Image (cartoon, rainbow, N blue to C red):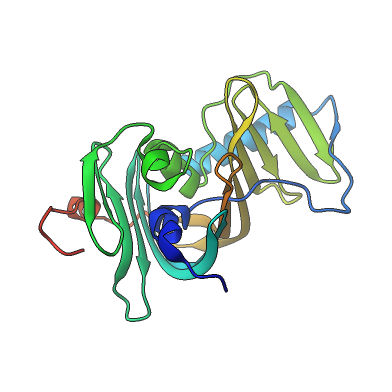
Length: 252
């Protein structure tokens, strides 16, 4: 394993949360454009959005594996999410103590890198500026809750590969596995370039609904990839507001 170094501390708590491209594995046939399934695909998309909106909060623990231009490594990760933009992303050392911590209540953020605490007002660029992740907090919360963004029908294209379906809109593409589960979200900028992708696998029933126990996040522009293998998931727990704040002067 390469040393984590400062880059993992800087991208750790949050990059560790986040994603891998929804790219087809080598050897599989390409998706092909199809017609005549608009109603069925729309029902699948709307079901996924409805199920996702029922996931209001999340508490999860697992192993986070991160790779990037300046290193790679594994850490134990604790994730707390509350809509619309509250996050607590905590990487633990072997003693179970916070090695890195990022929290935001949607208005203020605090980031602890294991040595010092940085805090300030939240902006859409704060995660990119602090962690190198092209992700606004509200997008991060949505991705971690496996929530597609708003959609505008009709879709630009519907493609198929066997029983899988891929649905393209102006600002995102959604991919569904053959069993109908949401398998991936690809976020696009105004030019159609990929900003970030999220891949969801190993969906299981848990109290409060269903959730993917493997989440892979990637950011093509920064070259970061984070793979989250979860051990425990709790949907819609009651989360205290204080969990999303760090008071300056306090030790995380």
